[in-house]
Image (cartoon, rainbow, N blue to C red; front, side, top):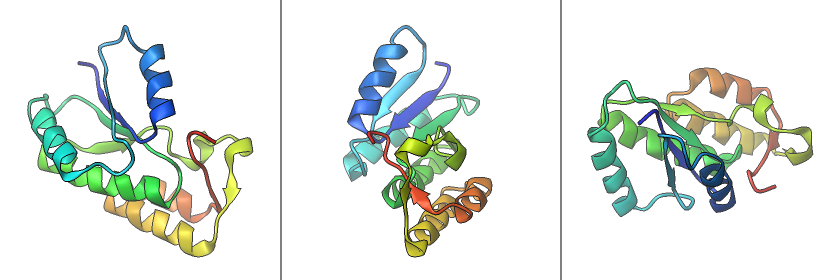
Length: 136
């Protein structure tokens, strides 16, 4: 397996799965915030993967997306891996999908990015004033 990618949104998951159906990547739909049972399954799966296997998450660039990432990062760390963001940087978001965000929302996004271990991304987020959902 070349990588393990979790995706928060159903439409994005289906598009990615169709486009990469012949790859050796594992893609898992989180259905928003994963349940405790889902997280237990994820931990068992990751525990069987070589530590060299990249583990990525693609969530919305909003408070919920980064909160989900912070929760997933704990499962990933427990398995001995490190969770990395996929297409969640402000520069990844097209202008057309950006919506103005209150300062407090951005502050919480930064907090959750830090909790996920994404310090560099948290710094990038601190300078933004927008949110974006994958499904527009």
